Length: 244
Image (cartoon, rainbow, N blue to C red; front, top):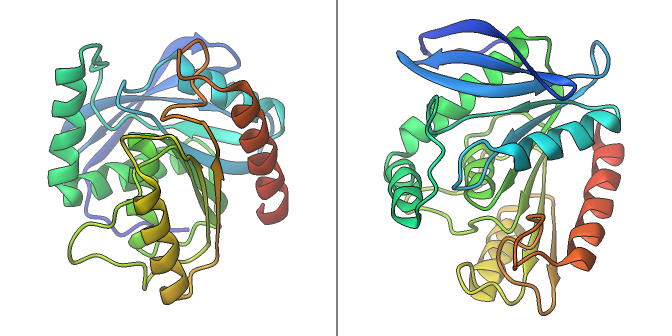
């Protein structure tokens, strides 16, 4: 698979090693980023993983390693920049808000991450993208570009479609996991997306969990809901088996 993105992309493989994978330093349009790549075997089915508004942290690395244990190659992308891992809510809103306002940049960063994954052995002809919270919104942004991944999966992610965008170019299936007690992303947003995907004819599956708040998969958080996490992970891994 080839990319025609016009991006300036330079790869620098870091000697640092985390768990079973490795950190990958790369550049998109002259700015440095640091992702995480793990692959159990050559030509393993590929997963692009996009972080929440904390940036790429141990949470995403743990999820990547869990997927590698199941036989998948994973590239956990960095959409904020090297060393930018905000801890204050105001900073998290600033970094995500900047990308929500600049969708062209968001798309460039997603494509740059995929180029990086491919350069490190990722098989993008047999791949899906997944995202958590902010990352879920980013994955749906990628789906709307018409890029030919086999699936797009969002866990408690943003579901609204920006003005002047639609899903008419979308290829691959969309899978949404959502908590019905999510006060940030409401069931109205959930229903609106379902109706839009149905109207556009995009293959989709959307699952909501009762009494389940935003960020319900984040281990150790007061919002973590073990049952919803386990059920969504089980359906997600089955989805991977069905499509990769």
